[in-house]
Length: 193
Image 1 (cartoon, rainbow, N blue to C red):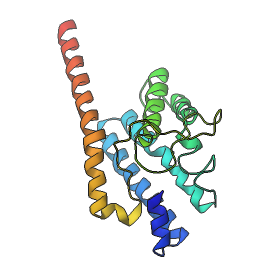
Image 2: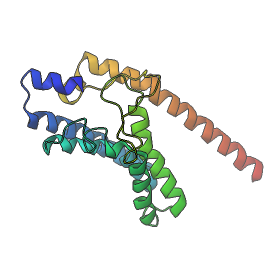
Image 3: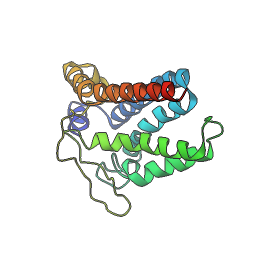
Image 4: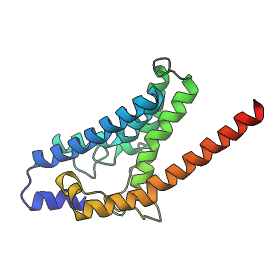
């Protein structure tokens, strides 16, 4: 992305760029997992699955180009990858204290949410949703989410703008959907109790 190029242009080494990407992904993953463990094991697995596609940033360290099939937003941002994560999760369903089908579809949905949201961002090269059948990268026709600066740039004025964008376009709608689902479930439980 432009942020990675800017970091390189101002003198950051490849190692510094990779470290910033990996640290950001790990911090988000660990915090999400800890929150999830408080709410339930399957929810924690879903939080981890939702950030798993960005572990493709290791490709930078391996010398794999951003635009390559296995570069950033490549194969790990595909619907096939999301289904594979769901299948692996289904095998671990008893440990996750859930049924196999529920686990499969929940983890596949959580994993797929990442590239679908990335497709709504205003930066990068798009996402390889249909990999391995198509190597084309896709953006949504409407891209309201500001692309996140990576590394130290995240803690800047631009980073705050991105947080506001994500709060408005991702977290507030997700919270509204969760509230409606929770309210619907409570009403149904009262009706059938």
